[in-house]
Amino acid sequence: MTGAGEGAPGTTRGASLLVAEDDEASRIALARSLERFGYRVLEAADGEAALRLFQTTEVDLVVLDVAMPRMDGFAVLSRLRQTSEVPVIMLTGRAEEVDRVVGLELGADDYVVKPYSLRELVARVRARLRRRPVEAPPQRTGDGNEPLVYGDVSIDLRAREVAVAGERVDLTAREYELLAFLARHPRRVFSREELLEQVWGTRFQDPATVTEHVRRVRTKVEGRPPQRRLVTTLRGMGYRFDP
Image (cartoon, rainbow, N blue to C red; front, side, top):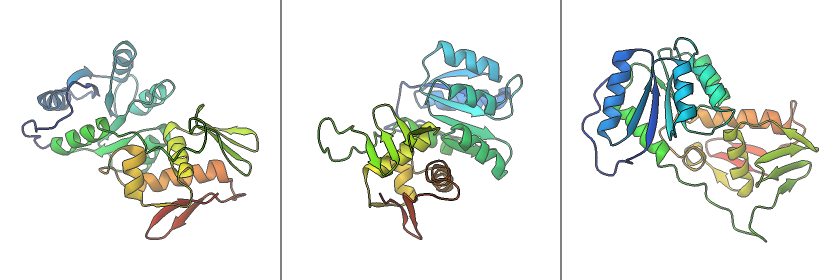
């Protein structure tokens, strides 16, 4: 890890963070750096301790190491996603693509490979905590949350559920948010960077994250092979929802 420097003006302060890392020196260094930016930091040395802290304390963001004793980071993330959409930044000592894909599949919001820069990690934490609400679409009637229906695809904005031909589709929270955002802005092109900012709340994350989520949404909603085409790729430009 490289140094984070001193706290900067404009930092989001007062948020509670959970840092789960089994290496004591790394955990303490990261916790102290985050505390200098005004955060309250809870520390866990293994996966089971991380879950206990999360279940008994209000936490705004989790920094979660993959390789931990008793319960690894992937197992912890899977348990968290059963009940919470809290932002999770994964830490790993391995740069293999498979680790990143598994983390994203389970619902991680960001992925940082060790050795990492404390300054960059703090910037990613701040970006996640500053996340802005997704832009609301122009209201048509009522409260603007009527189900969106496109052929046999229905998106229930109140229940946050998607159905195809009457059958509920099992989407992760991020997959749902991506599809709902695009569906609320039909025929408008969004670059991967714009989608990162609007749906993930940050531009620091790898744009490949968007590509992977679009692929999974297509597989689940459009079918394999595709029986319908809703999300169109425009090379060099981005993605568009075409009802």
